[in-house]
Length: 239
Image (tube, rainbow, N blue to C red):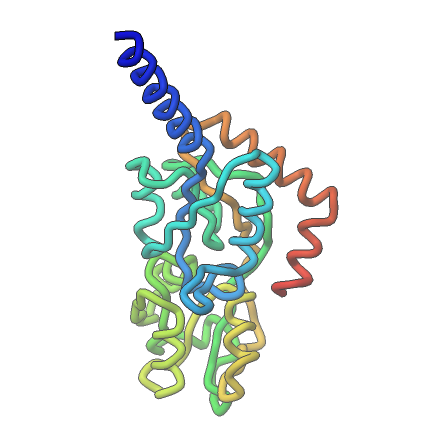
């Protein structure tokens, strides 16, 4: 009998140990279609956001588990507790703030227009009237273009798909976040940016409204990362 009890105690200890380890994991939702913030390299999700959230994980003593999914599915996954946080170059806009909390901002960007090098007609956002403009579903560019009268949009699940169609002249332009747009232009000599840009917007980490404690820990970690030079090192590495 004593042996059975001893074995039961051992099993319970092992179960508690495994549960404790599981609680130490932070499930992070992202969309690996947004270089240099998150993208696939040899099957692994890498980028500025990924290195940043791993640095945060070290500060709050949690193991980071990356979950790659469609951008427009990130907040629903957060609401359904399939993930703990979202880091995906996500703009902390008022509409999203109604559903989730956001950390302190960690990056400022704006919307820009990507064009074929030969395009001389489009210089500002007003010039997009009567044009067919590519956007990525759920991205800020999707929202911006959808609000523009007389502009037709074509929605894509991934930015690279829009880039390919622009190069093949199936669309007239793409509206996309500045750093990602610069990355595509840098690697595609046939592309350029228009001479204008949209209003500044701030990227932040999305967290469930139910998890205020995690929000506070992440904000504290972000402060430390910026203070100890880690943030600047990551900028230098990826930007």
